[in-house]
Length: 587
Image (cartoon, rainbow, N blue to C red; front, side, top):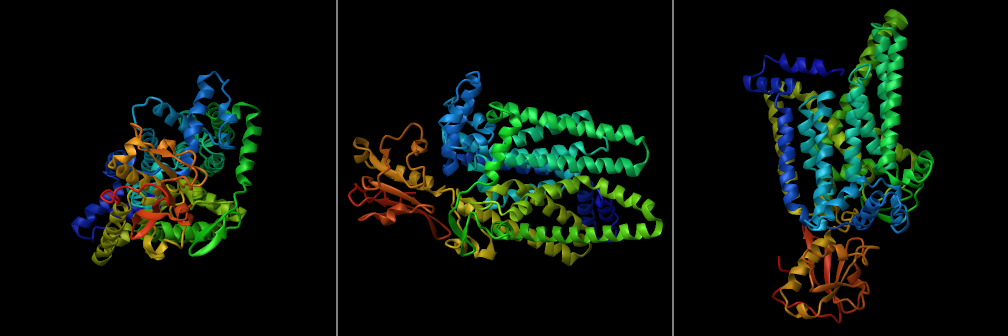
């Protein structure tokens, strides 16, 4: 890549700096230990994640994917005759690829684990696999040590970490898109791709398409990377052009064919008609989807179908930690300076030698294709969504898949700045202090918010406490499950409910009749599902629907509080039986 060798040379040639900083510079330049550090971070996260997966709330989309997965599995196990996958699930769920939901359904069917915990553990595992792709992707683009730094940025970002447990479609899509981006970069590592890399790219991009229609973006990354491969072949002039360009085109075509075969095999919706027509129907549905409602964004009420063009960057400004944002600003500045210098070099080369002088700049551009693919994959989707005024809702989960790539660009900026930061004792101390401050503010916040880390916002919003009431924070209603777990413990300690179960309404919008999966195994017999607020003994209100506040005679007996703010409320109905005073609010 352009600048990589220069950066390493700059780091290694810094002989005027003290020995300790020289060793750090050498470590960063050679990449020694980076893979081990990244794997250690992932292993630590895996242990913590699996140990706490059962703590996380069951969220709005998990109710319907729990219904969707077994029926998608039945489509295959019945020999493609069981059509419940298309006929008895929530409308348009079939327009998502179900491979991950099938995996979850198969594990849940073993009855070896609590089904909610199994889903959350598998979602987290797939999310970590997506983050793991940053290690080889960093090695091929911005530098080896950018991989563990990017993983650390992701794992210390509450919005990312929390989502890894309970976002049933967006997390698998993030993983598939990150691996597909890596596969395209691997394929483009040589001017004429190998067949092995071609096959891997076909499988990975096919998996992305078979997860969500947005996976078609990977074809754009592929064609752009192959165009730059062709540009290198032309600029190098060291082989016959015709055969080399034909081989590049042939391999690009093979990726497309293999990708669609993979997508068709994994996505039942593509199997029941012309797969390209079926895909077009699903793509158009999501492109023009109308789900109008309003919510708070930086204290203002905005509508899902009329969002300002600044919506995504302003959400990032609120939800990413300060250190992450600072490195993104640095990355933007470095990219701008690099682009200006490149254009200057192009102008100088053209003035000196005309068209022939453009050969070396063209070669430099072509050899930067790995970084360029990552930049396009990180920036194009949100820019396109903003320009198209696409309907968005629920924070920025629909562009969740670009966040690891943004972290990689941010980490790459840190490596680019390393020679400057290591050249001065003051700069090194300032950098170390900023890193320590980032960890000291983000890690305790993750602990305090558990298991609602995804509601975290940074100091620009006044922190999570300051953002409460100015942003839509718990849009998944995850705190509803936390409140229910507390109520379950209270009811279990009260012998009255062993004889006559309490009637409980969990007010998750459009899901209150589907809360049966929230029962712990073995199934609790001291409460039963209720949907009529007038008949309920207890009601659990959530940020999306604080139902109990409008019921006459209802009283708050408990809350789910984080940062001294309420995210869910437990009400005793006006006529219902209240738990004994000794159990109310039990931890």
